[in-house]
Amino acid sequence: MDIEGLRGFIVNLYEGFIPLKAIAPENGGAGEWARARYLLNIVKGLFDEVKVIEAPDPRVPEGSRPNIVALIKGSDTSRTLWLIAHMDTVPEGDRSLWSYEPFKATVVEDLIYGRGVEDDGHGIAMGITVAKALRDHGIKPPINYGLILASDEETGSNYGIKYVLDHEPGLIKANDLVIVPDAGSPDGSMIEVAEKGILWVKLVVKGRQAHASAPARGLNAHRLGMMLALEVDRRLHEVFSDRDPLFTTPESTFEPTKVEKNVDNINTIPGLHTVYFDCRILPKYSIDDVIALIKNTAEEFCKSHGCSASVEVVSREDPAPPTPPDSEVVVRLSEAIKAVKGVKPVTMGIGGGTYARYLRARGIPAAVWMTASDTAHEPNEYVKISDVLSDVKVILHLIENLGEQPH
Image 1 (cartoon, rainbow, N blue to C red):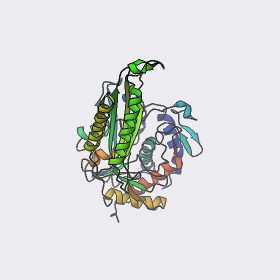
Image 2 (tube, rainbow, N blue to C red; image 1 turned 120 degrees about the horizontal axis):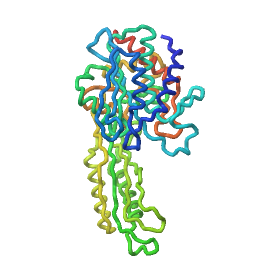
Image 3 (spheres, rainbow, N blue to C red; image 1 turned 180 degrees about the vertical axis):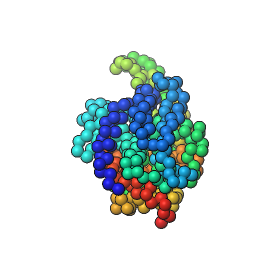
C-alpha cells in the first residue's frame, strides 16, 4: 500500500494539535480538553464508532479529563487491534533552551519540532493515520481496529487509561492485540515487554531558620537536606545494585530531581529543605524495601544531626508481569517490523512507565513500540515524519496479515 501521500496529512495533524496545550493540573496546566476537541473532530470522520469517556476532575475548567475511544469494525468483530496513545504532555521546561517555539509544530525538512511531537504525538499521529489509510483504500480490517487517545499518562494515569479500564472493564479483552506507541528505538527494532517499578518520593528536612550572619542560632536545613539526599542516594545505589540485561538501563536508577523553594532572601538560613527522588526499580526488588531504606536513612541521619525529616510517597507504580515474548501481539508485530523495516526485532524492558503496565496488571499482553529518536521531555523535542510513515506501514502490514497464522 502506497501511503507516502499521507505525509501532508501527518504534518497538518501535528500543526493542528501541538499548539493546543494538554498539560495536567499537577504541572500547572488545564488538562487535555482543548487538544481532545480538535482530535475528536478528526477521529469522528475516520471511525465507525467514537465515544468519550470522561474522568471527573474538579481541578480543570471542564470538570473532567477526556479519553477518546474509536473503532473501525472488522470482518470479525469479536477481537480488536488496539493502539493506545496519550494526549497529555509535560511542560516545555526552560524556554531559553529551545531553538523553536515549544507549542508550535515547526517543520524542518523531515523533522517536526515541538513539545510532545514524539511523546506522545507520534502515537497520536500514527494511530489516526492508520485509520486514514484504511478509509482511503477502502480496507475492512480482518478484526476491529481501535484507537484510544487517553489523558493523564504523565502524572499517574488515574484520569486516563486506569480510569477507562476500571469503568469499561469489557472494552479491552485478554485476546485482543494491544500496541502502545510510547517508547522505542531509532531503528524501530525494540519492542518493550517489561517496565520497572516507579517510585516518587518527597523528602523534607526541618532545621531552624536564622539570620545568615549568626549560623549558630539556626540549623541549616538546606545544607542538611543536601547531605541527606547524598546519603540516601549512596545507600540506594549500594543496596539495590543488581543488574538485569533485559532492560535498556540494566540497573535500578535513583535520581534526586525537583527541589522546592525555601527562603526568598540570601541572608536567611532556611529552616526547611524539600527534595524529590525519582526511582526506577528492577522488578526483583520490593518497592516497600526501597521506601523502608529511605525512611531508615533519614531517621539515622537526623539522630546524628539534630534535625527532623519526613518521607512521603508521591507516586508508586509496582511492576506488572511482563508481556511474554511469544505472545501473539509480539510475534505479529515482530513479523511486520521485519517485513517493512528490514531489522531484527528485540524484546526489552525500560525504566520509563507507559500505559502498558496497567494492561499487563489485568492480564492483557501489551507491546510498547514505535520508532523513536528518544527526545521526549528534552528541549527541541522532535519527531521524524519518515518514522511516523514507516510505523504506519508496519501497522497496516500487521492488519493485512491478521488472517494468517503468526509464525
